[in-house]
Amino acid sequence: MVQGIDITIFGVLGILAWQDLTSRSVHWAWLALLFLLFIAQGLLCMPFSELAGQAGWNMGFVLLQWAGIIFWFSFKTRKFTHGINTLLGLGDLLFFFVICMAFSPVNFVLFFLGALLMTILGYAWYLSVAKQPNKLVPLAGTMSLALMATMVLKYIQVLPDLREDHTTLLLLNF
Image 1 (cartoon, one colour):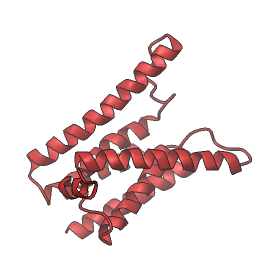
Image 2 (cartoon, rainbow, N blue to C red):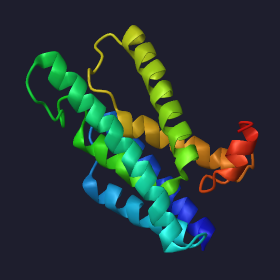
Image 3 (cartoon, helix red, strand yellow):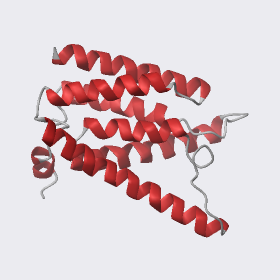
Image 4 (cartoon, rainbow, N blue to C red):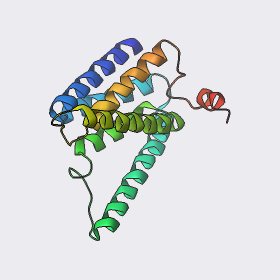
């Protein structure tokens, strides 16, 4: 059952990556399906209260970053801006909240920051080689690819379980 859910998650992530990389948008139905799949996957390995607690911490991290973006750009432009569909696409923001269900808090922060860094470096390379680059960053798409890679690394046991922090903290010597 768990492998079936993992394979389906992998497929949905592939569809999201393709959509975002080719059209710079994602369909909300794929995000809703991915959200439900992450909940089902989580409930197979932990009680609902633990899953909800981890997701709450992760969502708090995303909200804190979003508040920082709102504050910074509102301060910079001297007028309030929420930034949805101007600074960050709604699909990207929804994707962030969906993947909150897939990780423990430490693993979420590590994945989120690592995937953002890879996206920035990859997009900088793209801008340097493309003749007529698209100015929209396919953030949900590149993070989907990063999550697919993370799932493969977890499957071949290079990475620890993404839903528990103990092993990750031991590997980081904390």
